[in-house]
Image 1 (tube, rainbow over the protein chains, first blue to last red):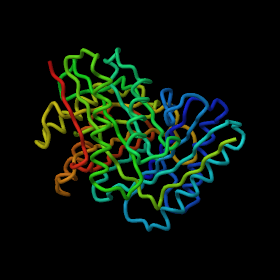
Image 2: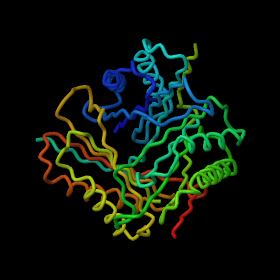
Image 3: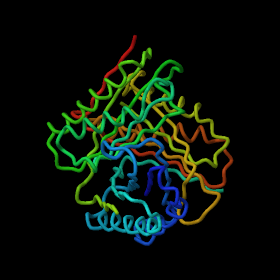
Length: 120
Length: 120
Length: 120
């Protein structure tokens, strides 16, 4: 942990996904809550999507951050806000008519999380 | 919010995914719980999957609905049931031997959710 | 339920994904907690990912197990540990320099879960 998932609709050709992952991971690292090596992120392109019931011209980017349980509400709100801020900067030049950005934070029960690291 | 994810196994060639997303979003809109523009859905095709331990002939479609926290149990149950109903109608003509449909509802902490909308 | 999602970074060419899903489903079945036919698993290849802020040479595999609410902490910990164990065995021959394995368990509210099975 943390695990970050960036979902983006496929009508955002100007989005630099690799750059976005780097900016988001840097924001998580800057929070001081995580070790660099523990931050694991991925981006998923959405080829089939729908916003509301009207087709065309609508795009969205959604971030889901999963963290181990036990952090305060304030810390979680700060993480959510800093991810939104970093994502917004990555979208400054997208020039899309309708774009929604959103961030959810999910707590994973620390007592049930299993992990193993192999480094040679 | 809400965010809806439709996962479907790739052995359902007759499934009309775009039509399914429209029917599901219409069901969410008809619930009266959400603004049209807030309903964000996506479909993910599963190319690698396994039901139980036996290969072949088994298909599934799974819906995950993420909503902001604070709605009553009754409202959440009604949302879950209406999504299952809408999905079932989309599957009426699939003619598959073994198909499982399922719907889960996940509450996202309203106090930690971040969102921004850009409309030009 | 249960639903299992295996995410793996695309720099693990020697990973046998189908074999991994089988081993994981067998581990879930061996737990005695689930019916064979209820175990639904999928694997998602991650083509865009980042571990920390440094590029190159880092891989991860993440498992998310969603189960209906109501099981004891001990049962959930045993499920998490047995999935990690099964996954580790599948990775014995990967020969990758840096690999992180992780397992999270998510409880889904039993009262809101909807399901239907069609078998002809």
